[in-house]
Figure 1 (cartoon, each protein chain N blue to C red):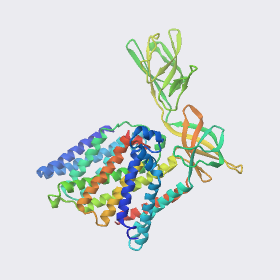
Figure 2 (cartoon, one colour):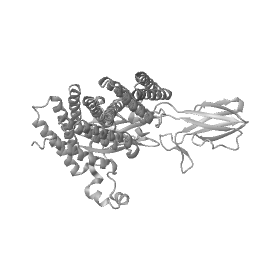
Figure 3 (cartoon, rainbow over the protein chains, first blue to last red):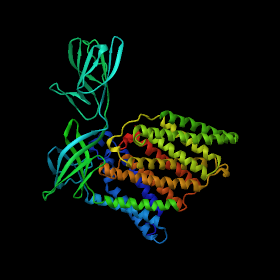
Figure 4 (cartoon, chains in turn green, purple):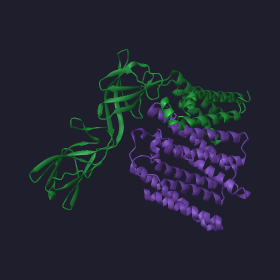
Length: 332
Length: 260
């Protein structure tokens, strides 16, 4: 028992856990076995046989954590009368964290829920993390999805002709007149990530401002034309025009992704909720996180559904560790 | 903003030079001037951070440059604490050296103010980054004192810092690192649905935490005398440096934005 509770054993276990964790951080985890054979042809056999491709899910890593938990538990028990409460709280807190993690492995579930607007679904699909992918005991319907931005886009144009230039800010649909150039401009359409589809239509490829473009209607000397101007390609000009126009896009930035959903219980009741980044929604023991979206589609959203029966135990462990550690810091 | 940070760097260098001259030539006035320069550097850095906070409309903790400024700010507070707990001339020299080294590292990072990505728009960002930087600052000061202990105080025991100073810095750093890891875990649970994902930064934070836990336990049981404690602090700082810089540049992961 004394050896089981010893600081020396803690040191050995901590060193082992640190060492294999370090290996797991350097060696790509959960890759297909072919990948290891192509990346390390000589070491692949050992990596796969030892489970180094899945360090954190291996039985021997779980064994190390279990041994650490046993070491802590016996240590707390043997020294319960000899040490002050902060020390007991810190060590017991770590045990609670490990217990909560065990509960997650034993009773937790996780999966992605891709939804189209108006569609109700309860079947999860496997997320990258893997694990059990059950069917939800209720359905989730996507009422709407939107991307929120910090501020609207700004469109700046640098117009120049015969060595004279002028910069103006234009707005979609609003006509701007430049008397010194005899030019009338009207922005028709703006795209943050311009791409030309197979049928020759300009469309948005993603919500990111990867290729900002502005379509202008130009009028000068009784003539008119419509053209696209690109922020990333200022040299793309039209030789037929007596002037140059350089478009600069001052981009909006994505603030949040928001899904409006309805949870449809088996009893027939419906509960509305909003899911956004850093603001998940809960329903019947499941928590829903904003996980993804499809560029160019504002009628589609991907949620991550998680059930973790151990998470509150983990947080209680955090509280115990912090309480004990604060007292230990004040009175070492 | 950048001008104020550069001014802080210049004043830090001046403070470091003052303390170096004080030590080399026993010119006390240089040391006193160095103290004033370091205090002015702290004021300039505080102004730089405040201006950046105001301009960006968010706490300046979103990328490598900003976190280095926060680290330097924590180091200047820690340096002041060190000079109070260990009132010898070397304290200013060590504090100034670490402070200017961190600001020099910041000069290599991109200082552009950028809007936060959605996942970072949370109050947890402030708690998580600040506690982590406070921990790194405490570990850096402990290691600086340890290096001094090994390099200089070995020949002159009068210059030797009391172990209590190193231990106090280690204890504070360990506490802050624990809070940093836990705030990160709570935030990750809220943003990504998992308090722990074995992301490289998380993993290396755990490794660093285990290293310092072992150091403090061994010291507690008397297995780690002053000299071994000093070497342990240096090993611990190597883990901190890898967690902070190495992971960003070599391993990526969920914290990859912090390397930009």
